[in-house]
Image (cartoon, rainbow, N blue to C red; front, side):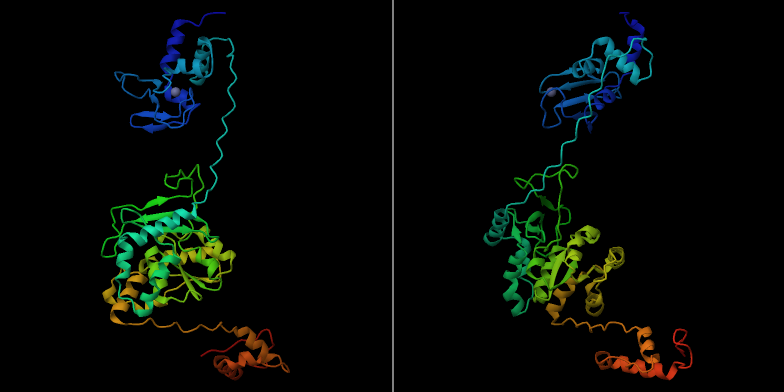
Length: 420
Ligand SMILES: [Zn+2]
């Protein structure tokens, strides 16, 4: 077999980039100036041991354009990688690289069959968080000072509200962490704990803004972070587990867990309304609302003052006729002193202090369809309206007005109502 000329070998090696070559077989990610991935030469579970020093490093950097595993001590450049990983002879490794970099080597065909692509591992199953774990955090909340709970107890509740506060906390399974953070469990509508959000509150009831919430996800051991592309992460609306217990209740959705708990305790009466939280203005997602639609629930969205348009948009996209953005509370209870950043819970707390009460929304009648009334009026010999409709004074008034204005001589279908 003819030897590949030395100058061709040198040219091919000069063109070869270790990151391309290894990258054909190993998923690499950046780690500082280097790249890392799982070592293909031993059964590697954690990346960080297998390092690729890319060709883009300056020429004087040691190990440039090479790979090295600190566990199994595999190392070398692009040619060695192909010889070791693909079990190619030296000339075939040069031919492989020549083909990759469009550099003619010789006319001997490359004796190489690429390995089949490695199957991606199936995502890990969705696991339940053991209920005992939820209970343990609730015990911690009872044993230790959880700042959020402490602050909540100090709000100016009236006697009834104060009496039911503990029950409200239990209903939401509010837990505590040893470091004083509150644990908001996200339990799905079938009662399965799926995730938890750990938040640090200050004694004034505000969240410590510079500390991101911690998460507990649905997996064994509960505490490791999951990778979204490997695991299915389910984050139900906070309070979803109450859906099953209160099948007839209107479902009110607010932004924050804190607001949901406060409003739930403020109103009580879970049989007629329950409070769920999506976790933030931008977290109201169509798919998290799906279980509510499946159950045919009446859903009222209670956005913060600055979130109305955005939630109206979600509501419109949802196209579910039993869902609406509810602003009556805000419109009738908000005062200048509450400020533009106030959410409904802030207003409720202020009303507790001042003794104000929320005004009940006037019940809305189903709109009367004018066309139906006209049909009744022009259908001679038919009863105008049935008894129930006649009971509505507005309908009686409309009918009388229509009778006066409607031109009975026009054809039934072409008639128009004259307006002033
Ligand atoms: Zn290795």
